[in-house]
Amino acid sequence: MRSGEERARDWRAGRIATRIVLERWVGSAFRCVDFVTETGGRLRLPSTPPFFSVSHRGGGLLIAVSAGGGGGGDL
Image (tube, rainbow, N blue to C red; front, side, top):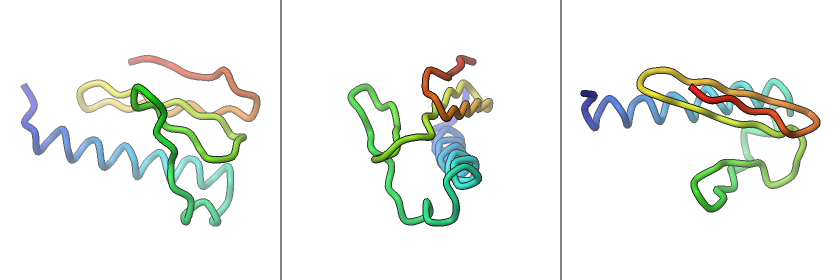
């Protein structure tokens, strides 16, 4: 079983990785944009595209990005 510290570290690393991936799509101006958190905890950008989905389990992380929406994945 993973400790709370490990889960917190992985959560932070996942947010950083998501920002890096999205910055490749949107450009460096994305660094100043906050995520919008929807009901249930799903993240989105205040203006879209790109659409994205983040899935994580244990130490794994999957980030799917799409210009047209409808992308995603599960671990």
